[in-house]
Length: 227
Image (cartoon, rainbow, N blue to C red; front, top):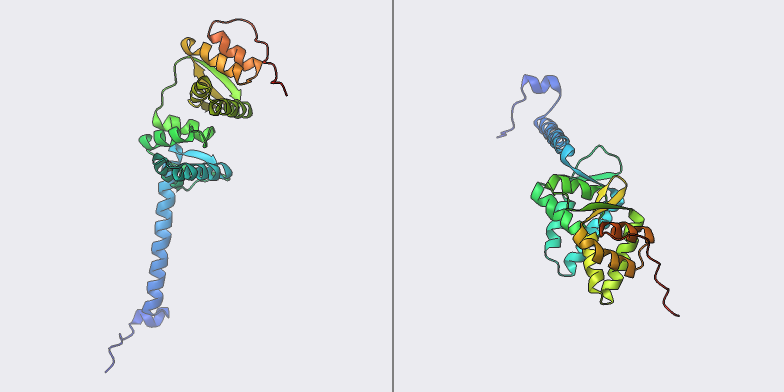
């Protein structure tokens, strides 16, 4: 005895069997889920932070390296940065963290070995509601900022506590338009200017920080070490 379903009028007129209808329904469900994801991403995008594709790859790699080096908190930062959303911006990767997550990620993007001073960092600060530090702003182009930070890190590795404090101060920086900006108050400016000068920072930068400390005039560059 056969228990096969007797074809209905609809089956005979449409030319479809139940398996074809089931596949069509699954396809419709998938399309609906895709549209729902797109709609959800569109809602989140105005509150997202954007990173260039190569930039995002570099930062996730750096966070993984920190995690493998034993920094437990780097795993949380990596998970936040890796949780991307759809975006219509070509060439960019978008993340849409909650304020507390944005604060965690921004903290780790400023760490040594990550140094994620980019437009995405500034947006994370906005999402986190980070207040502007006290003091006067000092602006540097990104290349100059990276160079002086590397010089301070090298001096810190050589045993300079002043350089270590100066590097930590610079890592409170954010990004403003195309420049990296950090803030210096009068009390911290003198020590910071001394550390920058000792590390070989440019005269203009040292002068700008000296002015905040109430010092006038340009310093003479340090003599090159003897061969």
